[in-house]
Image 1 (cartoon, rainbow, N blue to C red):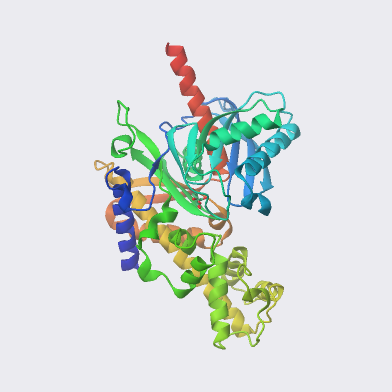
Image 2: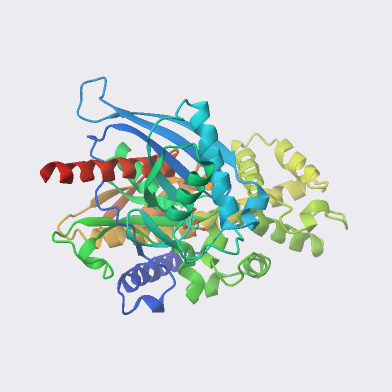
Length: 454
Ligand code: BGC
């Protein structure tokens, strides 16, 4: 996708963002532009211990965030994190919501026991990496299960209540859920604790999505604010292309990925970018090349011939070896052997190129999205020339792919160049869980101040 086309995609995303913020026009776009009710950000004065809970596409993370006085005597807290990661078993992706939430609560108990927290009354910030409607910080009505979650119930219900009920069923925990956020919002807030200029949260992992700081007066569904402060908006940009914005660029391989996915016709943007799909796109291209006799002199392609037979992790590993540039191709050969294909040196080169092109397209589409977000932020600050904003980023593709970050950064720079704004990217490691815990801390701090003022 060339630069002119990427600029047009960026324009379209910018347009859709504004349309999605207005109640009367919202139904014309698929991006959700959801208000998060996170309307204040950590300023370093938060203290105490908080639990962050982060349910993502593949893992559940539970963490204890402790905020103490800084040892250098500064006003900003020192933060320490203890965390555990639990793989979400496949059967929980397809069971009932109660089974999933019981799994979450059981692992909270495990975490509490391992860290001696059984008797502690701790506030919980819950990162839930799905789209949901909010009217306050601890209320979240699930709109749709996404990624590989194929759970039949739960849509239309409050996920905070489901979590509270599951914690109650465990019977032993004294934790109290006080805030819920999307992973992009958590990542943004966590980014602020590293860099006060952070105004964007981006996830490129199993799924992809972004959040940013929007003026409350621009979010039509939010009322009751006396001052014009900023609120994190969860864009749910994985839906962006579902109204046809990228039809011109969708290939036969994208169509096949879509057709065999759990939700055909939806998440077209995500299906071109995120870790759940990159390996499958590469696999389909390789099968096509093999079928016309361009690569792999074999009839049987082993696992490579079956849906899901090529992990997205391989795309990262193969790219890593390709850029190391020692001429060695052991990684590619052993990956191909593990999926049942014997590759010649020529095949290896082709496989590297396919991985490279699929990765470039994903990173550049993401850059088109982020440049639109940066331009929207710039439009909210017309007084500032040459605005610089920071994006906090997390997710397995961003963190694990060797060139994705540079491709994203360079292309975002180019796309923003004539718009008076520049984006700096920071890795927000553990961002979403830490962010949720910080949101809980901020919420309780404000609540205490209000009580104090009364
Ligand atoms: C979900 C979003 C989430 C993103 C990144 C998407 O599939 O719908 O809510 O933020 O993945 O995890």
